[in-house]
Length: 124
Image (tube, rainbow, N blue to C red):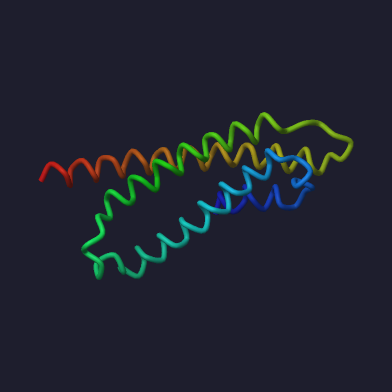
């Protein structure tokens, strides 16, 4: 839900005039779609029907890459926020920057728990 806020706050502005916000939009939409995809897989327990896939490794790689790319996107987002004549853009970009860092911390926590799960799986 918070990732959805990031890209909707940016999409409601003239972000296409600033290439940095295009990168933030790409990361936010890409990982939002993948997160919804994995959520559906886990909620429907589809992963139990495909035992050939190392799901703990997939989760670790997904969460780790999401953390790294979202951290970069959040930093780019925060550094690209500029005060303009149109305060709507400024407020939306500032809010999206805040929520990007919140999403980054969520993916960091997920990466930590995925690592613990992956490590316990490899020690068995």
